[in-house]
Length: 438
Image 1 (cartoon, rainbow, N blue to C red):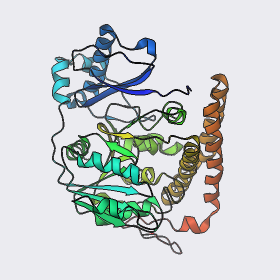
Image 2: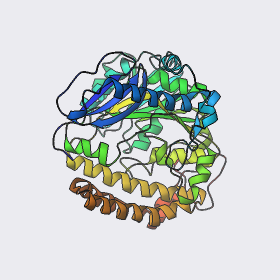
Image 3: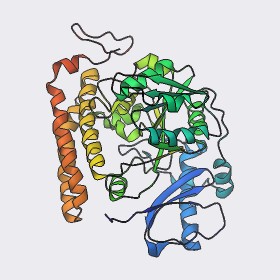
Image 4: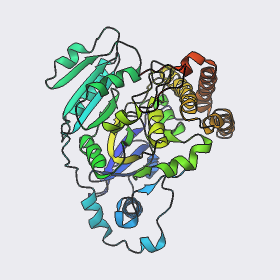
């Protein structure tokens, strides 16, 4: 991975203008108005793109969007194992596509759905500068949320003055450490029909709240996630996370994760991490009454992460559905230093394994154990071979921390007290001798 900064470049294909030249390569995100279409990493020699290249990209992106968004073409499509549409666009359906650019223009218009029904929750801990950037982005939303709640998870409430200086923002202090505790405090305080979460190191697109509410309004899904793009790629650690680790999202078409997806992947440990990222997610408020709150044993400040994907698992396992809608866009400020990234990937893997244990305990699905002891070791071996073949020492460096996180995660299998504290599903009382964290 290069040691040079990589520009994050945004280009609107609906503008009939030549893209500007630039110094060095760039991760280019293509849009049509307010609709994100796709992205690619370009070298300096490939910038600016020719008109012929832009025309080819426009045709490909437009066809993908039409096939994934037009209800007449059976959209949105169900998710397959990799989290992408299970069935491709059929030839006979593709033949129905006409007036592609007028359709794209209408579809890409700025969302105008009011967000009055939305409670927006930001959980923060000792990151005042990041929080300031996030709040400025949220206050600039075209559709302001019905309520904006900041949950301060620091021990001393150090965000209080910063938040209380902003009119209309509610401040909560949750001193019990752990992201799940903070998120649950936000849910309990929320009064609106929908509840959305983002992180303090995120800057939302101005149309984010409107897109989130529109997606929940238009579907029967109980949860919606969206596209998480990199805010900047100024350091090698940020580039490594985006390109070698995959970042948070690379999908630009909506996908429905429902009982079909759950059944398809259940025997291998349902691939709920493909649904999205906790930095960009929203729920119907009623789902927490149906399946419970975030598991306080999971997430940052506890086992490491995956409190979000474990909740999605509960939704799918009990017959619900989740929708990935990439027109709901936020920009994430990736970890800039290697030490921070190493801690992050270690925590991600440790938390992932702990969530697999929790899912196995709650629903009895042996596929979670299969993932721990078969799929993850295969992933480690495959990644090691790739780092050798591709001469990628930075990726190998992070792999060591993933493996150590996996080893740490295995310890949760041998923690009977931790396993007994699993939350009970509402309407499903815990077994005799079990505790509940709700």
